[in-house]
Length: 121
Image (cartoon, rainbow, N blue to C red; front, side):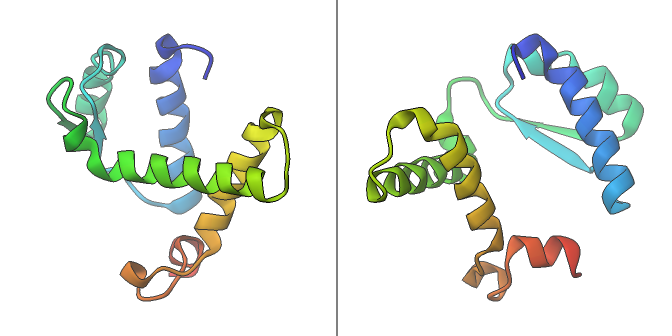
């Protein structure tokens, strides 16, 4: 996404993708109540999606997403350092990091991977 003004159109595309590919309805979306999300409210009302908004400037309320973001960044930078690659490969390394996280089993998921839970219910 090139700029925040594209957030709604990107979300509409994502919403259609999820419903078609996974035969599942989105029930809620949690956001930081940023200005770009104000345009989402009419769309949410039309599609029965519950907006869950955090208070402005309280990163503590976005704890799960903040920790996952930190996990991705730290794992990606560790991979870069381990193989002695320059920072210009950050994008590729972070994409690889996310793919790796999605195929690793996790104890909160009863030692299944997110990929398994999504595709092999």
